[in-house]
Length: 247
Image (cartoon, rainbow, N blue to C red; front, top):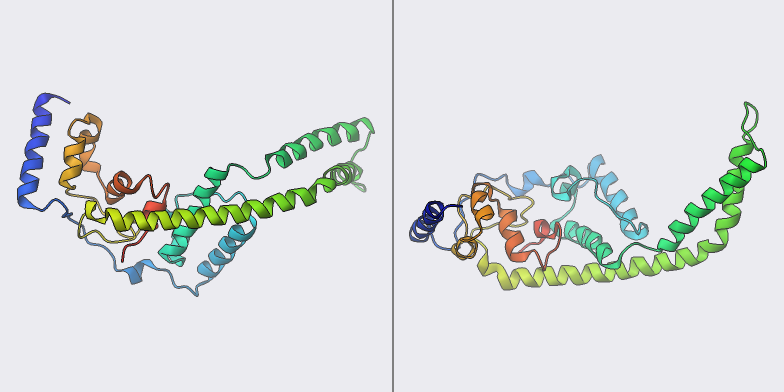
């Protein structure tokens, strides 16, 4: 960015500080919360709740195909419920994959079983699935002795994931309480529901970023989640910034 452009940004900062307070943020019209929340008794929400409950209880590899704050079923849950769900996903990143030895074992067994069934000459036909039966039965025979160990490790993993997720939620909530003064006073939560384009940014943030050419060039694209990420990103990792609330 040229010296002229930086000077212009500095002028903008000065004008901004005169016209509005450092913590004021302009908003576009936002829908009321009641229009954001999906009916809790709808078929969509019932299915979403059942699926999420199963993942939280039993799935050591929770994954989001789409960002949760852009996914319609997220409106079936309270912000705290969504925050806990995202916290579990972040906890998985801390723990790493569950029982990687088991995945490797199953892959190796599949390869060995296929070779064995090929050598033995098993084939499927219109009246027989001898080859498939060979694959299934020999795979089960070789993997089953390790299932109990895997299930014990998975139970421990799920418990640890929940503990870490709870700690992440506490840290995120506490951080928002401490750092709320660094966010726009009129900011509404959760950001997932009120992520309006920002027509102004806090003065302290402008001062910090005045030498950051790339940031200044993208200033016109600034949204509330960008400000949240600047302030809360370390304490509320991932999509947690979208679902933490302030009371």
